[in-house]
Length: 312
Image 1 (cartoon, rainbow, N blue to C red):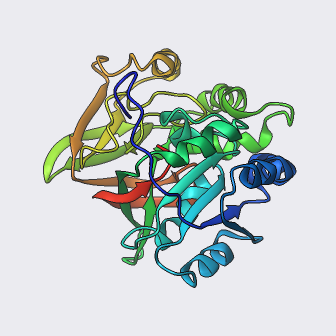
Image 2 (image 1 turned 180 degrees about the vertical axis):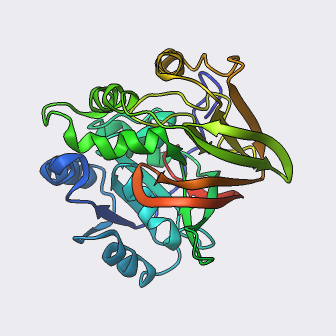
C-alpha cells in the first residue's frame, strides 16, 4: 500500500487491546499466543488480552474501552469483521495479526500468518485509512439486518464452497481446503436468476451461480476474484458470473486464481458506491468468509476511509 522502497514515517503506537479468537485457524491462534506475547513484550508494547468465546462478547468488551484504544485482531477475516462495529465511526485504529483459515484481507496487505515480528514492526508506520462496507440483508420477510465488512462477500457458488469446507479433510488448510471444496461444489452447481444494479444502473439480469461484492481483491485463501479492487478508492467492485455450465465454471475458477477472468464475456463487473443484488430464490451468502444463511436481496454501501489500519 506504499510505493516500492518507501517506508512510511514512524509514529507512537497506542495501548493495544489484543483480541484473540481462540477458534481461529482451528485453534492456531490460541496455540500461537505465547509466541506473540513474547514479541509484544520484546517491543515494550502496552497491551491487554481480550479472549472471549464469541465475537459478540469480545465486541462488548471493546466498546467499553476508551475511544483511542487500538485494537489488534488475532485471527482471520471473520475475526476482523466481528470487531468492526467497535471501530467504524470511532477513534479506535486496527492492527491485524493473521492466524485464521483464509486471511485474505491480511494477504492483500502483505501480512503473513505467523510472521509476528513483521506484523508488529509495522506498528511504527503511520495509520492508513481504508474503506469498509455496510451490508443490509433481506431474507424475504421484509426485514433487513446490517453488517459491517472489511474484505467482502460472496453469494452462490463461493458460499456453497464455504459451507462444504466442513467436509474437507482436516489436514487441509487455507487455499488447499478451499480448492478441495470448490471441486466438490462444482459437481452440485445450480444457477438462479439474479438482478444486479450498481449505483442505480443495471449491471446484469439473468441466471447466475456466483456473485461477489468486494472491497479487497481475494477470498478463499488466494482466489483473486476482484483483482481491480482498491481499498482506498471509496468504491466496491461487484463481480458476477453469467449463464454457464460446470465445465465453463471450472475453467473460470482456474482463471480466477490468476485474476485473469474479468475479460471473459460471461463475467460482469463494475466499481460503484452502492450495489443491490436480488435473487429469484434464496441463495447462501458469506460475509468476510463467515456464512450467514440464505438471502433473496441485499444492499451494499461503501464507507470511505472508515477504518484506520496501523500495520497496513
